[in-house]
Length: 311
Image (tube, rainbow, N blue to C red; front, side, top):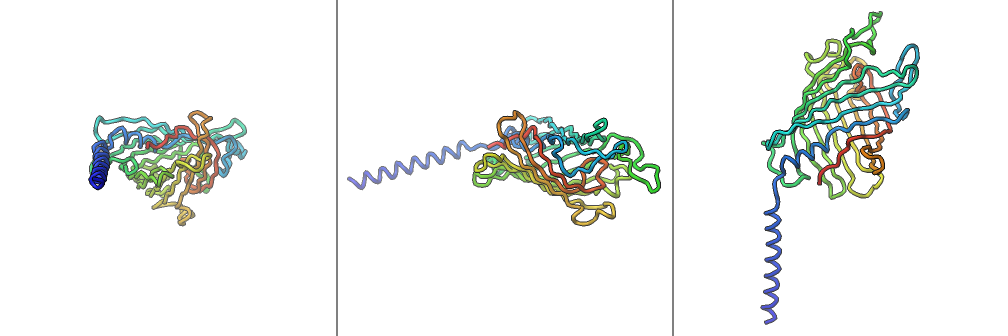
């Protein structure tokens, strides 16, 4: 009798476990457009502004006979999204602007970088249907523009010629193809990693830029969020770029072709939409016509539009 009772209890427990596992399989659903849309939105570039006089390494700007220090640097990059019904496609339109203002005199702002882009994100075939966000991946294709809004001659009429940094024309357009993969490490780190190839066709650049800008770039980026362990640190961004192709003769070394940057940000919950950050960048100057030099910059400031990864 005792043996029958034990057998009955074991059978009942096995049935309960099997029913629960079967229920979990039944409730597992494929990730839909809303899931991917949330994930893609979380990976968008955040806008930022450096705190006054706390961006170190930007060379002084020569203006009316004076060399002025940087007051602040800012990037404004709000994304706008276009869905396509139930199709595994989402398009982001980003009117990006980068500007630097210098301290002294009339507090001049050199011609900003106008960098609008349109990006199409795709998670359909050949990607398999996923049921877990931590294994989600997708591809993207981007068409971008970068200019300073000027129409003057690239060189000043001097001997030898010098670049006209105030009114000289700078423009390039590019295509970028890449893939992104979600990463989750034992409930400690949540994030995503992206690999892309960026191509600037020679016919899409103004003539004087073609032999010095570098037409092909390999980009590797990663974003991480800490899930626990360090309360004062929310996450970080890391980027690595290698420039392939024509550069100025004095900038063709491996070190000159490499660009590296990282950003650490903290959300104290006291600044509304802003998160404090510290960042470092070394590599080709990203400010339009000043691409002909390398810089190393450390900044302190505030990020806006940082979104958490869905879980």
